[in-house]
Length: 198
Image (cartoon, rainbow, N blue to C red; front, side, top):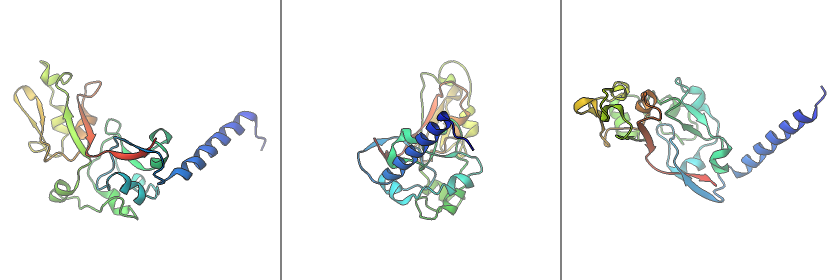
């Protein structure tokens, strides 16, 4: 098969990026901190990067296809590690990702209420009253309907204004995914910063 100039360059760039990324995996060299939402049960920060072998079994197992591998823009130390962007697809708390993790980078957590409430802390939902419809004269409440723990993690005040209970919110992102406002009026902020390579 003949390889033209354009194909050669594309292949070379892709291969070079992969090799460079591989060299930086877990090295911790030149690390900085960025906010990253990890799958449920993930170890924190650099401990997660050391434990995760980038097999991506968690992402393949995820029935909601919420778990994605990180790209180069997140830094070499975090390349190919799993993360979740709730606005694109949220976690449905099935706990299947931890079942297939071969290194315990993701803790195995039972999918019952008590286990999830006590062990899952992917992040924290925060409402922005300046853009939330219910805080600006229009009834909504869509985030409340999406919450797996209504009246606990998320409550509605007068005029359907959402209020987050920080002790009960597990950071699954279903509220953020469901929010009909653009940009979203409720967002998940990770519980801790995750170390990445700058």
